[in-house]
Length: 163
Length: 368
Image (tube, rainbow over all chains, first blue to last red; front, side, top):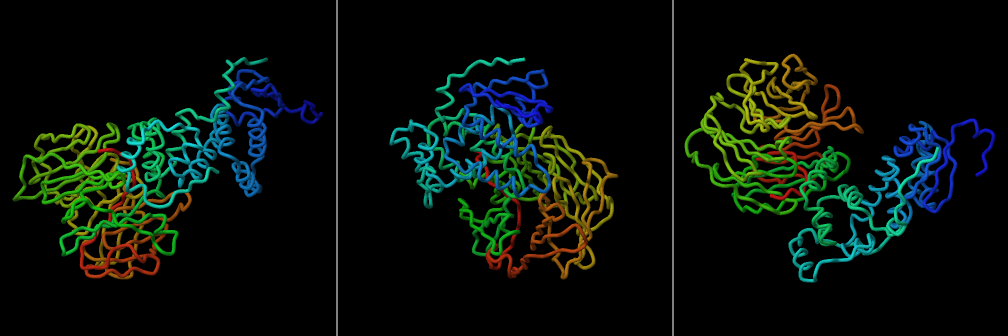
């Protein structure tokens, strides 16, 4: 990783992803993650993240950089950034939410969980199973029984799409 | 300096099945109706959604004002009860208020004793009680009371004991005999006789896990649902005989409302620090453009951060929003024989000869 003279003056950290890619970021950006903050407070400057893959880590570093520069004037810009950030597939969101949870970045966790909740709110149970990669362990009889009990809840049209 | 961490199997990370704690984080953000549907996703989702821990976490997460609903009960002369709900969000921010009727499983004249966390306590013929969760359509008839209160004064109150996560119903018979029902133990327990004095208000106000009544003697009587002990509080107009005092809750504080000047003026007092008489503070005087009737009770007032200075106040017969100042925007009024809502509230309460009582409600998964 190349570093400019300017960045050398600031305290830097190196994050290492599960696929062994290394990223240099400013300490002030990294400490928005509670996990990284605790390690920095213990004197670490090299942080391996064996649960976070490169793809997710790149996105999360982007997020942290954007939110580290939060001011009153770029509020709209950050909102647009956040909107684009969560505009991705469920699998990507799941990987990001796992990473955000591991890194303890609560504002990102909140945003991702809320996004996933909003997007599955009107889905059918079948679609939810596919989205979450869950095998249905009900027998057809059991499923019919529980659906009957829920008859009231099952009124209305479902969204069967998987995005 | 390097930090070594145990390597997790990459296969675990890349398969997108999320651990239960993250599934919980996502699901607690969903409405009750969706969660009921998602019980059929898998056995583990059913177990998660039904667990008392999840039910409580969901309640806490959805505690905010925006999840509150206004529940209007309308007693018709045709001897049935209509219970209509509309969301506070809709009442405030939408030009036409969305509302729907709850399908009351008891096709008779019932009274709502109270509604806490989405559980509704119903009373029929004074000594028969039910606890009802309209969201999951479950109704539970409580064991019969030993005292058959055919004659005499009968008062009751329904509340939530936060410490024990239990719902409790208190009945006071002839101002002396007190019984308490606990949903957790599903039984009534006779409490020590207590000379409570003549209770003035019909239904109590729940604040801090305590049910509060005004007494004829001029004070406030409460029972703490947590330790089941009685206590007394003084209100700012202690000892003054005034027929138009009512208790209520503003934000999360105990408050008192005094109506005067031919029912066109209301003073709103708030006990800023619970239990401290000196902390009673008069925060508003509201002038209404007309007489608000002589039987009324404010039941709800709350502000949230987004609309910091606005409070909603729902009286028995009118729904109003008051701002942090001495004026009030009335958005609906229910007369004793007719309903005349302003344009903003079009479909709230059935227009019929009826007695209407407003209460706050919400939705919960709580099994009963």
